[in-house]
Amino acid sequence: MRTVTLGPTGTYSHRAAGAVAGDDDEIEFRESVRDIVAAVAAGEAARGVVPIENSIEGSVTETLDALAEFDVAVVREVITPIRHGLLAQSESFETVASHPQALAQCREFLAEAYPDADVEAVASTAAGVDLAREDASVAGIGHPDNATGALRVVAEDIQDRRSNATRFFVLAPRDERSDAGAKTSLIVSPGANYPGLLLELLTPFAERDLDFTRVESRPTGERLGDYLFHFDVAGGLFEDRTREAVEAVEEIADDGWVRRLGSYDVEHVV
Image (cartoon, rainbow, N blue to C red; front, side, top):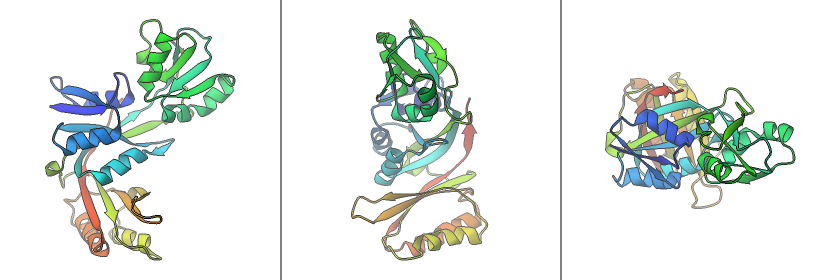
């Protein structure tokens, strides 16, 4: 089975994909989340692993937009703790390079411990670590296990919140959507905009005692002021109450569309 995720080797996405793929499965890298979702939608990969939300920085908007653009299924959720280390050839460096989210997650530490260091955003945590491996004036932020070769761990657990964790969605082709699982994800494009619309969309779930674990709005890209909504619900579509709530939302969004991404279970991976 081919699994695609963000590369290069050593990213947190790669670690999450390793928990999904079997020993004989092939993991390939793509340059963007959109490329991953497109590959799964086109049948070029059996699974895709993409970050959906970080406990510090919030939702990954590139993933939200790609899920609205391509018709795929969410078949699993993987939650992994983020343990950032500062990796360099020595304690003397001029620049800290990493993915923008990693830099943001370590903002307080960098401001306090290395206020004079320049900060450089790169494509991934692994790319920053590679720069540090090539250039002694650069430090990278990444998992401590990536401190190989000339690199050493200058500081461990540098994330600003000890509870830092990232949720990843495991994607599959749309025909693999399931009603079984503890959570359900939906995308709702209501095709309308009027006072109380969002409350109207949320009410069918509240009336059936269903909790939301995430509610997110994103612009449709069609016109200024047009939005669609991403819902994560603590209930599976195998339950009558969840199915009835979704059907009620589909009636409200009759002029637009509702995409049932599927129901799935959650796995915590260290």
